[in-house]
Image 1 (cartoon, one colour):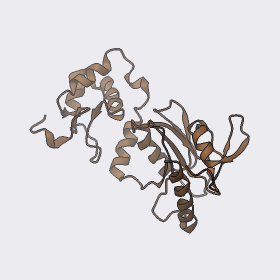
Image 2 (cartoon, rainbow, N blue to C red; image 1 turned 30 degrees about the vertical axis):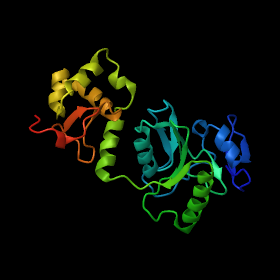
Image 3 (cartoon, one colour; image 1 turned 120 degrees about the vertical axis):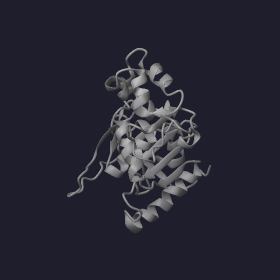
Image 4 (cartoon, rainbow, N blue to C red; image 1 turned 180 degrees about the vertical axis):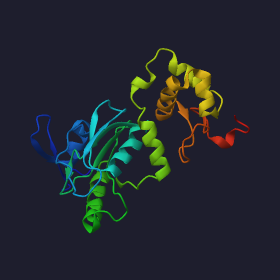
Length: 243
């Protein structure tokens, strides 16, 4: 690790005071995933979606989100079993504040921006990406400009995210019955009916799909006849004549 680099990190300490520290040192000692934004997300006139909060199923806490594109990326990362922490704009590197910090189970980190289209941010964003990438590379982390999700995948994740909270699986015995109902791949509505009253069961099915206790093809629109299977099921091509 090159501790002689010129990279500095700026962040807020737990009482809200600004701290400037050598980047390599801060990356090893500071839990960025627990910090508030080092600067506020901008409010852009005319935009339909402004800054807000995302409740993270991974951490059980709210995370600041600055745009719809960022919220969509956070939604996907919140479902990733390798992710253990998320934070919005917790650190400035040089003069740039990446929109998102991700902490992974193996101890590595990701700084990311979430552009709504590939050219968002212009030349300044390109130059910033080069600098932040170099800073992350020094310490074994990564920086990425995350590509927008496919519309169908984003819509499916948005639907399942509405059931991510544990309250959708808290009735005793419900989740084991749901998982057992889809031990063999079958249409969504058939498995829900096998586990009980669909009105009560479907929220638990969607919760299980969010947490990958069950699986389905999220690249096609969800509907009542979509095939749902166990966690280790590889997809519809594995089953013939289901339903």
